[in-house]
Image 1 (cartoon, helix red, strand yellow):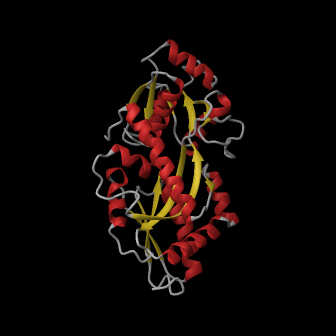
Image 2 (cartoon, helix red, strand yellow):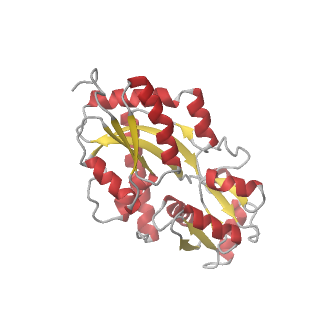
Image 3 (spheres, rainbow, N blue to C red):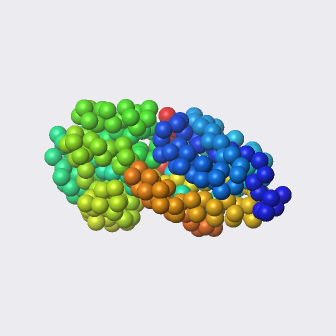
Length: 302
């Protein structure tokens, strides 16, 4: 099969999460646009479970013909260090296609904690080691390791309480059962706007269009800090490079569409659409970065 004849049958777009989250939203934005362009149905399959490992193993073993595409996120690069024996090789068994989006987490505290800036949060944490409690969506999740990276870079001691998902973590944060969290902007902004939570910064390298008034962590006093929530697409290794390139270019075209871009920005995610080579380099850099954090934090999967 050549790039000229691709695709010649339905494309499976595998999402390793339950419906309704950011990866699922992006898949259901992109899928219909690809269907429209190519005249072949793009079928979104939600294959959640085992911290994305079930879906990722499925993709690794699929035919390398471009008709199985998977959305991956930051967890794909974290799992390399979190799990001693994955049923696939995260670099060898996949061909990166393109990064879809990138969006920061948001640093939020319960109003009972008197921190009104990141510097004040650091000062409180240093004055009260082992007493400030933070919530995450689960051990080894991006929201967990984003705080662990913060702890390493600021030499602070915050206590981790893992939850089974972002929603229960947010519920207890709003109730004041925990004091700090680094959730997605989409998950937290409504609660910030109604005063239930106080936002201190965003975790990306640049300010977010969704909350432009909030400083980055670097601006707020932690130079060099960056922890992005990102998503991208991969196909099985040995997929012909011409097909990978065609898929990458078509997804990039979709991401430039005004209606797609607008919807993504409302989700707190900025379109990226880089080349397969650039996305491959980014994946490798993220694997190296999170390996250090996993080792320093002693993180283990739930």
